[in-house]
Image (cartoon, rainbow, N blue to C red; front, top):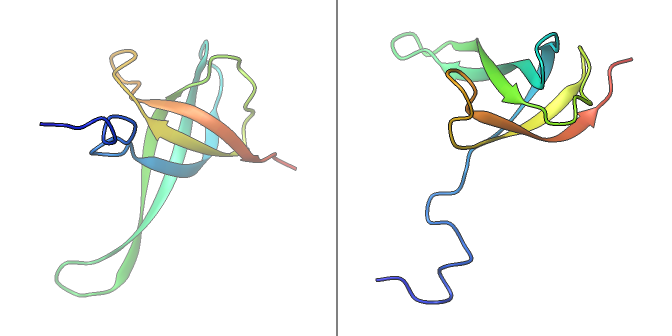
Length: 92
């Protein structure tokens, strides 16, 4: 059972990632590259993995090269599962 104090906080908070915009050619959609540093399971060496996320950008304000913060959301299309929350840094 949940009480009234628990209703305002989510039990499983949504994931938040930061990445670089690779493409903004689609209508209200961005492609964002998110780098992740993980330790190799056998050798222990730290390796970088890049994941491409499809991000919903309602206003179309992000440009290629911008550093953005995205948040996990409900499925918006076949591939889009993320939503743009803020532009951290503009491309120079």
